Length: 438
Image (cartoon, rainbow, N blue to C red; front, side, top):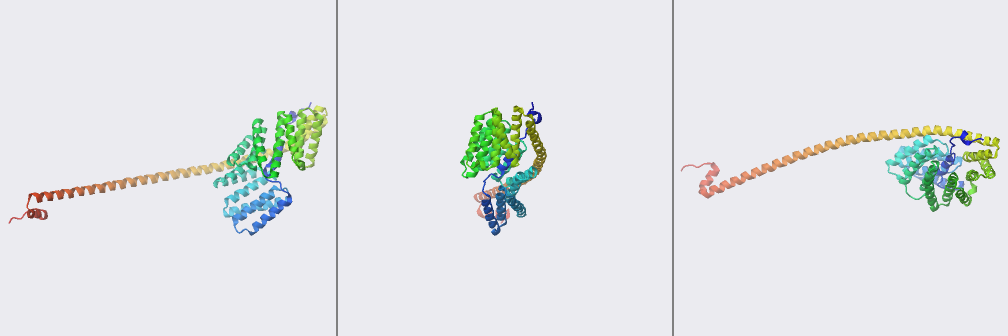
């Protein structure tokens, strides 16, 4: 019999790529018309703005809104405004505007270009700026994006550290906090730490359910229950998995997103495979596979290929089993090649950032040593001055006391003369120091 392990000792987790799209621009899911209307309004405000920093803020907002949408023309507008915001921020030394611009550019590079190297560099640059202006929310956003890159490149422990730091920096129960919890849950799944994953899924679900925006709420909960279901399939908790799938299907309009439908079907096929329902696995797996092919969705294709190859193997149809294994291998090779290059680039960016931090630390330590020496020098001067002044004061006090003592002694002597001699004789002694014979 054919065995999956023979061909793929470690299957890739292609759903990571999809997750990046969900995580980066899932703040809202407006219609194209409403996005264009909002961007038009922001462009009008930009046109009448008379302050450069205000212009930067509006350009960053326009880029943010346009990046969220899949429309190619809007994406081009977003890039234009993003680049202009970064350039103008540097020109006027507007740190917060520059950090926001670099953050937006990094998001775009992950989502649309899969350029993790430049994205990492931009996130670290933004992080450095946010640190210099003590912006904890900005730092939290950078940490979350750096964690996402680590997750996509399968550095799950690093990803958890980044997401956890993002939660520590920003504790508000909003969509960013929900996404950080969700991402930590996904990372723990990849590490097979299901108890931790379940805990963070519950945190994310609780926060998503409290959101006021219905689109954010629905989209976030659909993702949570989809991958919570997948985790239960892995654990063999098939009843719990189907409860999660039913929960996803209970959301109105869930099937309007073909990617969501395709991925749900591909995961569900794995659940039926666990139940040894081969026909159901093949039926649902082929539906998922067709959607993946139609919409060029590698994530759905990969998940479906895994289950279909195994199902056809168990059925004895080795020709079809080999077909899906071969397709899976091609997808795996493509992703592995891409990830390997991105890992090298991302590691280089991390190294450059750590190198810069080390240089800055050494410079700071050098300045601290110089500053400490200057402090010691000033301390010596201060102490010396104090000693000299103290000695001078003591000397003056001593002189004053001596003069006072002599004055008292003199007065006492004069009084004594007046007591024992006639006043005329005493006066003559005082003035001439002797007596004249008469």
